[in-house]
Image 1: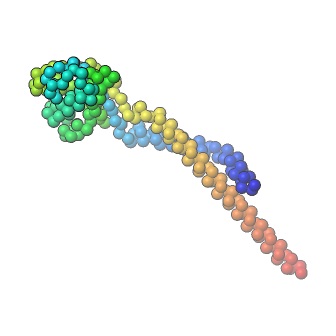
Image 2 (image 1 turned 60 degrees about the vertical axis):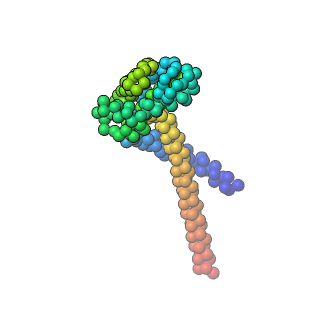
Image 3 (image 1 turned 135 degrees about the horizontal axis):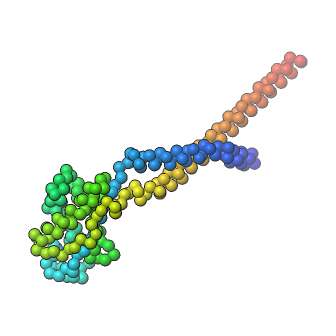
Length: 226
């Protein structure tokens, strides 16, 4: 019963430490915001869309019928797009200092709901570079297809632009701040709870010490008056 009373007292006294809980919560949110805004390097994604015409006859992967699967289309053009020739030509045209391997790791090839539409996404810490690389890649790809296979069966639907660049931090900022707030709130409650428990323990020890001292004093008085 006494334990239940103690817990209830702790919960009741937590309201007195509401300012501590709120302070820790806001401190957590402010810390995460500062890190995301000034410390963490954002990752920007620029996407260019190309349209691949119906493929009949000679293609980058050989004779593939027009009913080929989505994965085969992506694989075929993805291999060419990420080939050393295309990547090296892109780096040369933009005068970038990345290695071919580094540029290769920036590129992601996916398809839209329409299997003939391929998304070329470039991830980079510099939004302008991400846009330039994505757009240059498609131009180099068209030239390579013409040189290698004498075909011009791709059309650029949408070019990347800085207005359409996605930022990983921008998309997740609200979620990250909300998570930081929840974490700070929980930590605040734990700190307040522990502080209150230590306070109660200190008061109980102090009361016990006083009772013991009082009892000792009473014993001494009884001894004196005997």
